[in-house]
Image 1: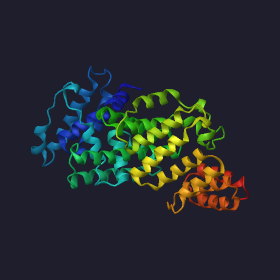
Image 2: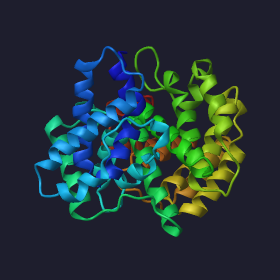
Image 3: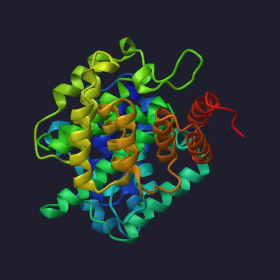
Image 4: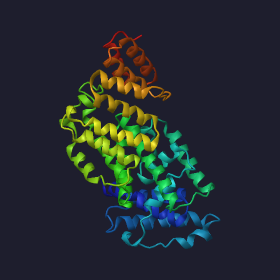
Length: 390
């Protein structure tokens, strides 16, 4: 990695946050900073003694040049001091940038795209590839989002009081969505970027147990990445995974991050993931504890997906036909339209009860709803062990 690439990775988010704070214009700040990095490609070497200060000064000068050509120059030029300060002497505005990119006035897709572009510093083509859309489509999303921030007067600030908890939950949801999009498609980059974003947020909000819990939760899931498929690329269930392929150092780091606190949704999910992580083999899993944690989580969230996971845990804790029957009872009346894991779970529980015809029908329903080819192949294989899939 050359010095400019290293500086981009290390300093993009903080420099963009600082420039946005000064200019109150995310689009202008981003363009000026991009031009500064482009200038660094030809100006370095020699590498300056203080690369981020050099980049900040270069970006400010380019912003000044742009502002001088517009009617807003008189208002914004006094905010810019074109010098070379030590970066530690200026405030860290990354938290403001995160809350701006994740503002609830923006659509979820816009929040995700802006967070990856502005906070993670990913180029537009990479973001487009991560979410399987064209570069022009992603560029348009980013442009619309930045325009909306300006036109709607979205404040560039960290919310306070009760608004902080509400808005923080939205930020965590964006980061977790980035992670789950990558995790379900076995794509490493989105998951890794989400973990990096959570680390940044944990650095900025070190006393927030839900922020720390989300970081731990994603690390625990990500630690299993190499064991989730076999040598032929087929999905492997959690119970059948080779746990020697789990990344133990990542598990240790995640467990160290977990901090006791009020039972929030991410803390409870992280506690559940930790129960799986500390089990040396599948038979050692404390399913009763997991079922209890899911019970608390369901009471807290009222989520149907949590009810589904609780049913699985209850079935595992009960064991055999009795556990499967109890799990099925918890699923009675549950509706999750288009969510293939509900019929897939029913199929597995019916299978354990020897109700093979009903299980086959549930497998067919799940296969019709499944979104990824790997999961579809897995379900077809499970169904074919009962009989021919139409």
